[in-house]
Length: 173
Ligand SMILES: [Zn+2]
Ligand SMILES: [Zn+2]
Image 1 (tube, rainbow, N blue to C red):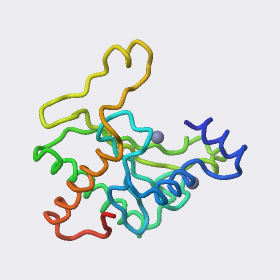
Image 2: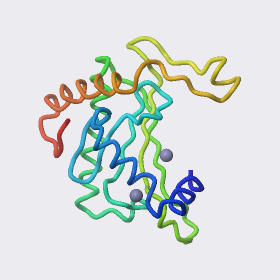
Image 3: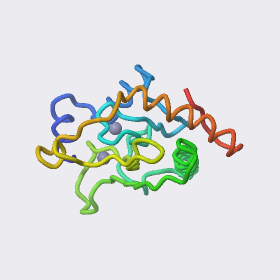
């Protein structure tokens, strides 16, 4: 991941993730929730049906780079996304929350952009997505469905979750 960010930065003079955020905002169809400092979306390159990525809108490399105000908005984001998952199929969904930050060796990672990825293994209320022949055999992940359609389902679940939560800082598109 680091080398992809580096390569992109060398070639374009811009950050890969900043460019992805610009593209997602322009297209709009895969955005699930957004507050002042963070955006949550189902990326067009998702592997899992209901994968959600959370990106800081500012170009930051790790959690300590966040201001107090940004931390508050990150907490809002994590609360809304987990509530969205629990609303999606009307059950507690297990999930993995993965933080990607710059390495801690004090080198310069100015080209890198931290982010959080959510993976949850269900493709329907009682159906797990399995890594099968194509995934294990060729290391190619097939996507069950169309990302824009799944993003729509997540957005609707998010709207419902927001009604339950009551107090939040952002909005669904
Ligand atoms: Zn960036
Ligand atoms: Zn990542």
